[in-house]
Length: 211
Image 1 (cartoon, helix red, strand yellow):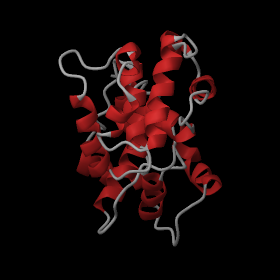
Image 2: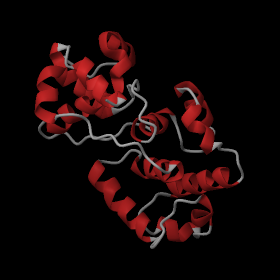
Image 3: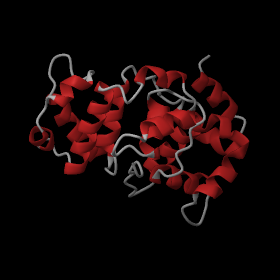
Image 4: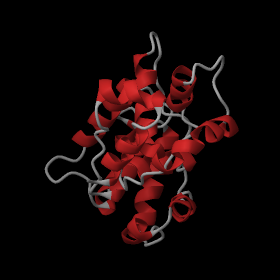
């Protein structure tokens, strides 16, 4: 049984997650294989709805046919204007190029990330322009599969809390952490269920928070 399955089992002991688990099953969180690709994707997805981000990311991928862009050196060679042409903003284009540069020159110790603690990963990756706590939280969840990540700056998570806990308004960080205490060690799986709850809300366009 992997860590996510264990988390689901533990969350099932809490009434608020019972219906969500029964309806949606276990989270489909597979450990990412390439750190650079994962971070590029996170930058593309910042401040965008899932549909818009997926469109731009699809165009971005087409710039790298064949073996893709798993190595930062490949991205470094792409002209700024060509990256912009897929729909990336000037800022995001500069962020991706800065990320590629820091991977290439060794500023980012990507091979050590798997052995770092959560706070160490956050401190290390936020050295890159355009990578903030939200982006690293997404990386910790979807690439490193850390079991205890609660991205309280994410709008979908806030909305999920509001729906699941029947709150009158979107909660702040302190309130979410307080509510999460009984299941905090399993926050990654819980976050996945909050996103499902938010996605189901009528008229709700989920944006993945701030960078």
